Length: 96
Image (cartoon, rainbow, N blue to C red; front, top):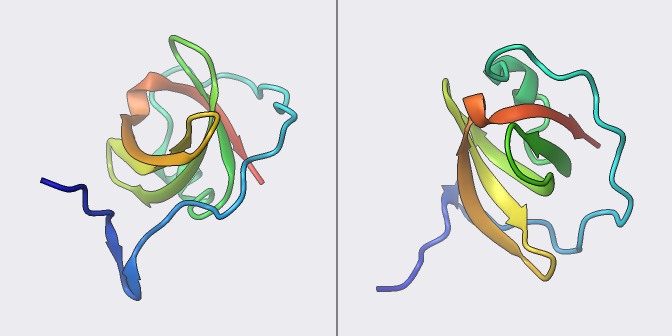
């Protein structure tokens, strides 16, 4: 069984064609509860840095925002891979 990337209006969605910036941005104030879907919607199709509640931060390229989750492409250090996250697991984020 092969992986099929998510579909957009013009066909399969893909991550950015180049790596993310090499400099990690300064972390903004953390949210008290879950990240608001309306706030992170402004980062759709933009390079975004995410600080999870637990674990190291990472570069992300969101392509979908739902009521409780966000999906898109996460930078592994070598390439972009499709993944999704529960908004309650995100402490803060910033996008370019």
